[in-house]
Image 1 (cartoon, rainbow, N blue to C red):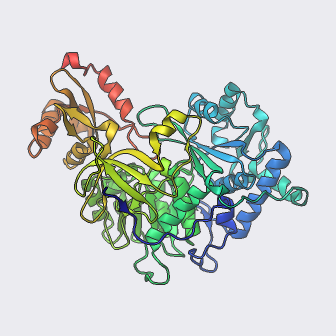
Image 2: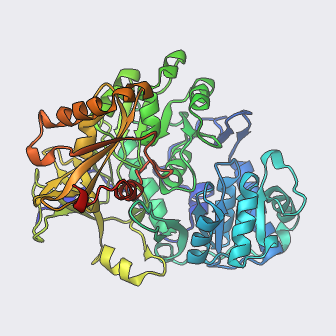
Image 3: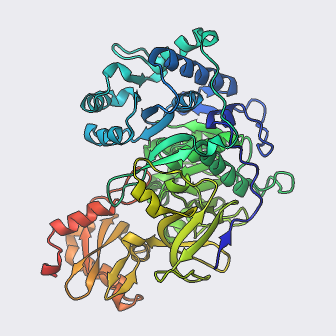
Length: 563
């Protein structure tokens, strides 16, 4: 068996504390010292700074207020339906203090989409941002959750006419702290099974599944990435470390997504200031980088596209950015090179992971300035690639990645069949086709379910997308397989053009793009059809919603009978 292991020693992972305790109270020997006066969180637009004591106070006040007002008990589920907010973390930590479970939900969902997650997780309380309160109340009504059990997150601690606000509950709880019982402490080993989050999967190929993540698993994920990117603080110079105490990180990744959960807790743990950005607007992001002199930029691929191709970037001084970490989906070589041109002095890293493994699996080492691949395994992870015949792939051979990690999820909530299929004998089947190169880096090929079969040969959509995005007229592209009577499937490319006016010569350009791929690709990899679209549908983490495009292809009549 060819099994690969993460390099470096993984620090002790406490399994008898909650995430809230780990962040706010626990003195971990690996945790670096935060510089004096360095705030933990900063509100992007106002610049308001929040330190440890205020976070502790608001967390404990919220826990006491919710417990007193709503009687939340251990293992109750609380659904978070909010964009990024300065009180997002205190809300999460406050519920963890009560040993309740948080189910983070995308605030752009409709009432029907929200209803699906409500039915899957069965919460007894919802916390909703004021901007999406109407949707939250409608979803709660349809589900059967009383409206008085919907708490609202307002801006600037404003009160609300009909709902309890988070700030009101914090103030209420602080007045009654002495009358509220101390939270129960976890027993040794209990943190491995005590659920912290019920997080939805990406759902790019079907309805999302709910993934149960433990407190210990999330803590492990924080320590694994921190160790990989900082190294042993005693033996690695600060100049080599990616994460440095006193840095400032732009918190623009949605906090309801696993990438946002992980990549917001890591800076906090590592002594880095996190600037809370409510939502992504490209021009605002550029202004925030300049205003806060951002060193750490955590983004998803659609933002990487804008940073590398939008002429607006040239109007801003972005030289403070030292580290760019991109996750949620893979970057092509062409897009990575385009980022390098904009940020020639920055470390550029692709983070690879899944919700099923609490986010992190691999990242480029601190010795790699530009990560064209997904990097090496994080400390504590074992992995192998399994070929279709069940044998184990060697270096340079492709197979499905399977990993064993202290951060692995408990399983799929309420779905024993899916749990047994994905989590086998302690190993998590990722569903990703990868190979390990001679440096033991993970080279991502594609999702197994997205591989196109042409005459029995495997065609990776990512390979064709990486090729097409190098064409001067192409801004974005997604390739899907569509049925074909003769070959089984053929590739169809959905293309977003940089300049819509170019589409006036649509037929000629489509032929040009197909020839662009054909000139240096085997025949079975040739693109059969090109369709121009205004945008590529993606979920909030940046992953392409391929099923939407497959459905569109079929609606266009691209079925086997018409090929």
